[in-house]
Length: 141
Image (tube, rainbow, N blue to C red):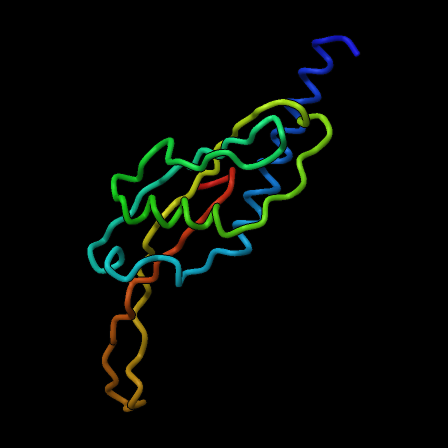
């Protein structure tokens, strides 16, 4: 196979593998993963986690390549990557070391007002607590 074509196949395989990993993490992440103290303090941000694979196809290192500015949020992102079972490395990437980034977005969304539970005619509006959203994957808003 010509070197240019081989390199193109490797790039496609790498993007596909990174997307597959992000999807697996997405299935493992929930709003409960947003630490209470971070919600209370209003901490938000984006973290990029670098995943490095060895020539043997085994995980070599997981690290933060771009910090959210909050070590607690960064640590959560790294731990979510560590928790999943990585998929098998595709043939195009075997016998070579490679790395990829998994982006995470930690965002708080304000909940709308909700009616009080007493159901009275003059029910006042009671604010809901902010919810934290952890979003892994390549297509973050």
